[in-house]
Length: 261
Image (cartoon, rainbow, N blue to C red):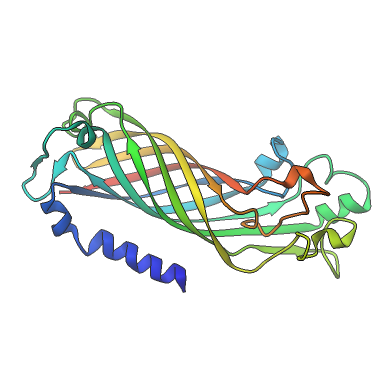
């Protein structure tokens, strides 16, 4: 329900008031981006290539930009200031889903613990809504005018996050590492209930000018969640200190941006 209300607010903000915002000296861009998501979680081992390669999902995002360098109400450039020529505000809706498995030395052991890990599967399903402030070291005005083809940028932002994990096992009864109570919900372990949290977002990318009204965008980003339950697992730190860090993702995106003229 919270996600539905957030979506309605976002859609109203983007599509309900373009005239009002344009009269203040803005213009708008919309687009879609997609790409692989590498989920860094309590499944597998941190900094382990097999875990990084095995726990890769897919994400999609609808994006909207406020462009301060160009005015839609007069089809002219806005007043030239450092902020208007080097910054954009990006709002977006994200959705990504990743199937998760245990990999690495512990999961490969021929032991009860190793079999418990290999028999466990998870799914991280995440909905996010938020914004980024993007900084372009080169002139946005010159890029719009076709002065150069590439426009690199870096950005920082935040997200409200709704997550709905799922954890299963091919073994009957209680799932989890031995001893079984390691994953008891009261001391940290498995929790498949839907919940929400916040995330910090860091990104670097570049645009490529396709034509006057459209760009190709390529971006790498990291979402750092303020919760360790996004993947549905949170083992006791005292027993498994390697799992003390919150979940996060690497996301490589490729997309198309259209300028609303």
